[in-house]
Amino acid sequence: MEPRLDITMNQPKLEENASRANRTAALIRLGEALRELERYKEALQAFDEAIAQTGETTRLLNLKGITLCDLDRFEEAEKTFTRTTEIAPDDSAASLRLARLQLSMRKYAVAQKHAT
Image (cartoon, rainbow, N blue to C red; front, top):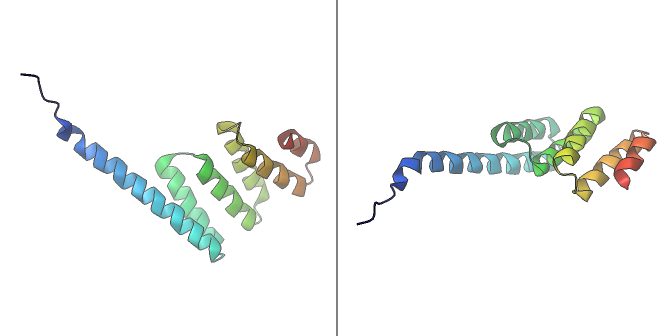
């Protein structure tokens, strides 16, 4: 008779991961809804909390960067978009977003690097 694998040992971990994923998805939806309502500070808090739970993802960093732009916090947005391009160097949309921001900040030489 073959030994049975006891998957119940991992059940709490699976439930914890599912719960964390659900909380993160809810925070993203909340942040997006708050942005639509132009409640940018609260949206930023939701995105920051989601990042704290799951780590940096391109989606979360892009949402955070866009929200920072909404708040006219361009230097922070630039750092956030730069981080996005570091973790996803092939993401052309992220590079373009960074280049557009840098153009608006009159950082032409740096923007050209990201636009190409």
